[in-house]
Length: 262
Image (cartoon, rainbow, N blue to C red; front, top):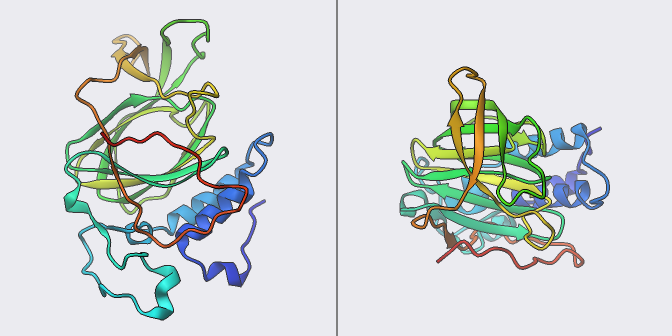
């Protein structure tokens, strides 16, 4: 059953509400989140817009460059936004990461592609903040053996060539369903807010692995996936988070995270 915030908490910034909800739902890593809790998080994500995480989607004129003191908690901490038009390559805005979950935004220029990759034993919630993106996704028919030096196997097509346009509902993928392996290509400039639980971790056996997909002509709903190296010319830049100040649990300080910037 979904948990409801009291009125005082509802007055917080949207990103603070998202963090607080994640902290509640994912506080016990031994217990998988329930479908009700996942639905609650999706509802919170559905209410988040680009400006709530410090990004200007380029579609709405700014109301003010100097937020009033009464709006300080809810406004970008610098009084400015990262402009969507400034993202000339895929850029990651890190908001928070701890042992249990991570929150961040991938910003894409038109035409940029995030290659096909997996989310091992992870639940991922995503919200398209602005723009449109083409999605290709799969689920393993049977998980590749852990002993294999390179992962490969048969996968079921979840989304063959699906275009998502903002505004749209937040999506969720699970370890074995919902399109755990996916690739994104920006049709227009776009941004995707991601919540991952647990986050990627080489140390804990959750690396990000990339794949090539080979169609099977006689089985249109399936493809053969084989692990591949990340293209040498692929990189993700890093950008600072300029959204409202985030108050985190004292026992939940930001851990080190992969720095995507060169």
